[in-house]
Length: 328
Image 1: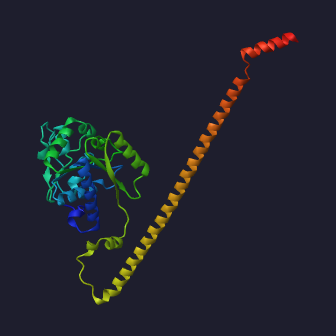
Image 2: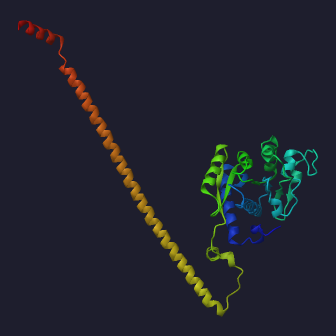
């Protein structure tokens, strides 16, 4: 197994802790929405979705959940490389009922599942690359697969193809409980992310959240936040005390900067709230003025109508006027 599974090779690293936090958030969703099947996809390629899928599945397995990761990217699969296994037989062989030798054969999905080096973690590889992955995923065999694996596993994670390039993940998003969109720092375009979200929502998929990958954060800041990141460091010698003092001074300086930032955010938020309140009050006053003006106009029109009715002479008055004219 490659070192890409950092949650297994370095479980005390800050990155491993981030994956555990992601697992915890999804477990809370599990309580509310029965989030047992999870699709991990991205907008385009090279955003790190396969790496996210593998490490997220590993953290679920480490918590004691019997976990299955399915490599549903049948165009450019990577999970078999990460876990160093054979790609076939796998998902495409099960869906097409064609074995890795190219012969027609009914295949049981459970026979294609392989146990990884991580305890409680299993892999269903992609299989042979088919000419029609989207059509295979739209078949009834996909529903049968999901019914089968959800009975035998606590958590099932699908590593899907990028959803803006092909429709594979859009199809899967309708069948799973939740979808995670993986984005890459300074690489993913916001318009692409909006379009991916729109496509998944359009077919009835449920988006659990967005993972921002490859964020540039210095190692020092991580070590200040996670006390166990360097828990195996031996006691410092006397000649390193000055470096320790400098580090502590830098840490306190970082804390002061963070406090200043928080204060500025609070001031800005209060200012924004005041401006919003003033805008609401002005809008309310303007609405009241418009309503009052309308009422005044209506009263004026009514009074004019009433006045015109009074000025119209009655039949008796008409007779008197006619008699006066004759008299003259």
